[in-house]
Length: 234
Image (cartoon, rainbow, N blue to C red; front, side):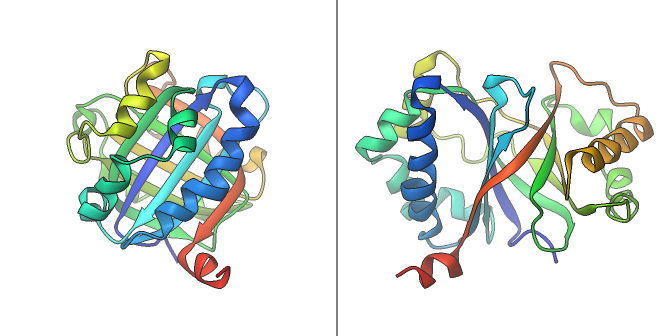
């Protein structure tokens, strides 16, 4: 099994502390159901950073879709340009937003595990820095590690889906425009220790060093919502 569909929208960021409880309610009860109800959206995910995660990286969100066109469909853009009052309030308090539409170029998993590690590459010249095919060749080795259940490689599109929508305006009100990634690697597992070992294996293999252009975070799953879940709740 793998990620559903051929494209994903990935988001990292934080929220003003006074709005954190409201943010979680909004994302689970309004935002994910609204998005997943749209044509082509398949599943939504939100994870919260484990202890020690910086506040501006505290949350990781992902939407899986049939293909990238879903993220520039009229139906979706109508939502982006007509945010609800609750959406406006939450996004106005969003900190350090990172939002990118990606192609799923490799994916293998058994269901969806409770913990996820993410590696974000921000360098636009990513293909000159790392051989993506070589990373793909590591998937079987990584997923065979103890307590590792999945690995996914996402190639960011630096231009697609970067329209100046109403939601984008609200997201920038804390002073930061959307960060765009060039590549992301997601690893799923049953515990953080196993994920750290998998990340170390990858970073050692490819001589990767964490820094401003390469960010590594660890998350615990908070909520997953699929189309079938939404249909069953009606």
